[in-house]
Length: 158
Image (spheres, rainbow, N blue to C red):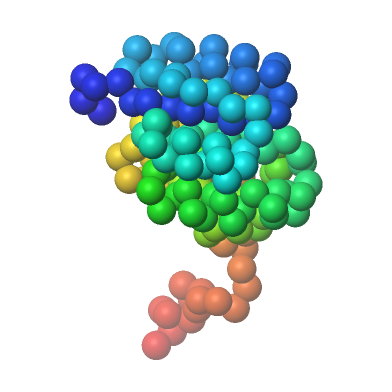
């Protein structure tokens, strides 16, 4: 990141989460919290698109399916800016669906203080970010797939 502060907007229905995440975001000097929103609506999406370089959006429920109404707005928003989700959902399939919808990163709420600054830096550099426990689960699921690729012994016998 260059010397220009990255403008970050924070969206959460819960004041405690906004305070916690704002405190986390104030640590690195290259980050500037420019807006806090209590809810995520079409109006806040338009405002965010003009005031911030990146949005940190807190997902309030562990039930990822309850986030569906917000996903259409996220798709529109992600076309013009970077979006990092902070949530409690640990289901790797649901997290992958959120990323396919348009989010650039997903940080588990319990790891936000450790991972959010790294997530922001990664996303601003054009990469995706997924909290380590979810990324581990995704990797193990990928590795454990059966019959997708030949085994090493199959390749050696030819």
